[in-house]
Image (cartoon, rainbow, N blue to C red; front, side):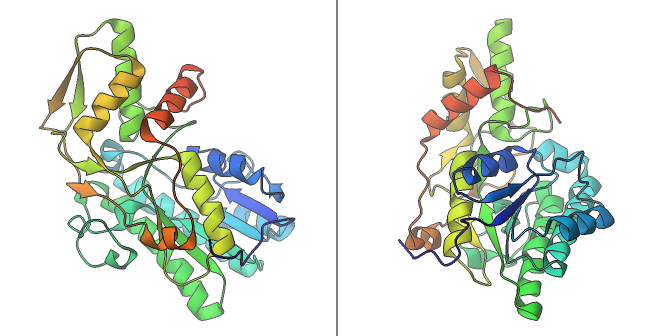
Length: 317
């Protein structure tokens, strides 16, 4: 394992976006890091307001920033809300990254997304694939905003020497996910759909697309652990992929979620619905070379996520 080059011990740490699934996972992980967490909920701090963000940074002076805040959603949400996904994510990134620079934060980690890579990128996707081809049209608005955030971090590093870094996590699932019936990501959407079908005694459940695309899924607590590891072990201009390095078809994944939930009916694939990119698998060799790998198995992680869903610890936004 590579050496620690930046210790979080005793540091003032701010997680921008602590109310989302990713932010909550980062808070859980950072509570074990012996740092000083500086908390600010969405009600207390509007990250889309430049003045509010600047005032908050001026008063709190965080030394470390994890920028996890974002307007997120699945294919349906991206297709129907392009302005929201592009404009809101651009504002959040610009406000927080600018404030971190102006108020002398020692280090910032920006969370991008695997959707920043070209639709037809060579698989598995290396970090060098960024900006080498056209994006997947169904999530291009979110992807462009995320690319802008990654490049803004690089720009501050180049122009001012700020230690701002970025990571590209793969598809996430886990406790605290958004289970909106049409705007959520694949894992949450399927889990809710199968659960409701089980309660209703439905004979079949519709699954969007053909079921043939291949995807990589990672438990959000693995992602959080990877982010903390990167913060302490990496400083460089290029972003790093965070994933499992393993993939399944959507059909295989849907069958696994159905089994975990206990739905025994038929899965009906609606080929009229968009599939998105045919394959999305991250090359995680650079992070592995630093000494980090994902630990949570897919079935194990889905079981945990479903138990959290049953307890009502989730959002619908």
